[in-house]
Length: 337
Image (cartoon, rainbow, N blue to C red; front, top):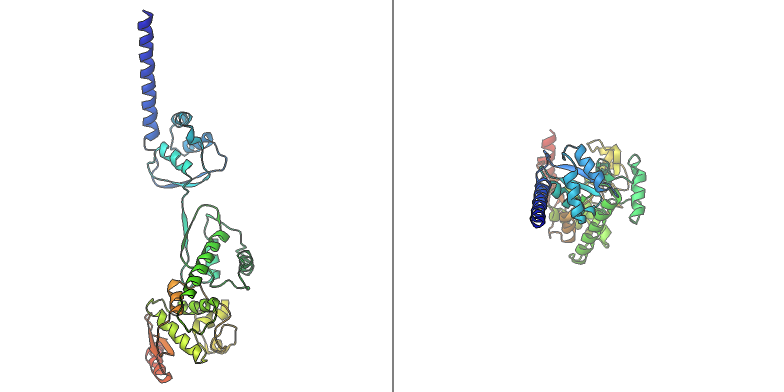
């Protein structure tokens, strides 16, 4: 009699356990009512109880019983890692737990475009809500000075020293961290290309090449034209001719530039006005991309000394001033008339 009762009780326990594990498996793996991908932050030191309460309050969990029971039986899921995670639509509670212990935080990104300036980079970073802002964005001059010191960049102007690209980052990554990465990438590209540069070239240091690359970057967005434009400036430097490039004038004007270059601007002697100064300006005038860097290290071999925009993104190149004046009359004066 007792054996039968004991056997019956054992069967009942097994049935109850199987039912419990079946229900737990079902509930922990069922899709939660998450309609679209959403960010969720696990705070440092936050317990499973706190997280499950937040999930319940968001309406994702009907109750916390099953997730808490599962974690008690699988203690590895108590090792939660702080961070901001992207929760996929219809994810299960188990998938959330797996994500929270993986430490695979959601990657945000910021894209810096070739030819933009450090002021534009800082303005873009200031708008990134998930970036930890350590620089004073209300005082750009002070922010640039602080940036220069923190990254140990020689001089007072870090222009040109950051490689334009898309940079991924996690929540609360500092602005300095992102800019430091861009700075290291630029230094690497500049060093590698300098080692394999064509010779001879009219610039003696990698920094002078960086300055030249920034000018080439601003003169044309056409990849095929960059080596040719670089050759024009190389030829002019060898002949001791002034570069006479409008982007340097614009950069020298700073905030005074309102969209048009006047004769007065061309006559004004700033440190960057290559119509008035010999050789290269003192610093880069923008952030050059890889194509511009490659172009100034391996410029095309040409006899060109001049070029003028056709107004469609392309340029006409000339060997003599007479040819250049004809091209100016055809493409620039006609367009203005």
